[in-house]
Length: 275
Ligand code: SF4
Ligand code: SF4
Image (cartoon, rainbow, N blue to C red; front, side):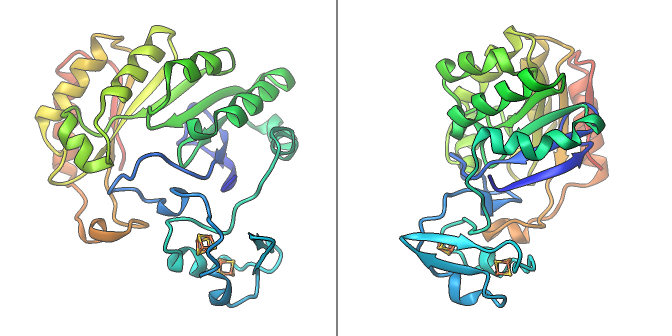
């Protein structure tokens, strides 16, 4: 577990606790959380860099002292592996025990990442406990790279998913994320068939997918599945990114509005954009 956020209003309906799991199977150029991409391989590079002495390497594992840590992010910046030593190894029950005291103030729980489907055993176990122990709704934020078999296992304990679909063109998708989008489209079709595709999200990246043609094509794809599925355009921001994306500009308000209009023109009923 990378992090638990006690309260969020932007990760699904209502007020939600959000669990960020470590590890992702894509390498999106626009990722603003690159420290969640890989699992720590205990290389030890970060240990001597920590100004608080909060890290040590023993028995081939990195150990993080949360009490000493002052969240300066030095360890994340020096990690050559797109990882972080600040993760916790927890059982599904331990995770629920941490969230359960908050549940009276929550609408639900969202599991994000990284890519939550990378830890499917844990994800199913955790959401099963949430369902058995509360009436909170259960959502995931996913890049859609999950097998049909895994999605079938998840269905009984999942209320909804927010799925990232940056671009309809498979080769542009490959350039932006490292993989083509065939499996993402399949996952959206699958979840829509069970009424669990809550939203599709497009991070608008200049030069890759910032066109009304892509907005319209995305909207057409969703509308023929279910015009009530939400489509949300997220403005790319360089904050938190690494590599070439650090220099990229954010798309303008005018362009974001044009994308929304182009998508609405295809018959989608719930189209929005971030500020
Ligand atoms: S964020 Fe990392 S480097 Fe900074 S104090 Fe915490 S463990 Fe140490
Ligand atoms: S967090 Fe990164 S730098 Fe630190 S031990 Fe793990 S892989 Fe190495």
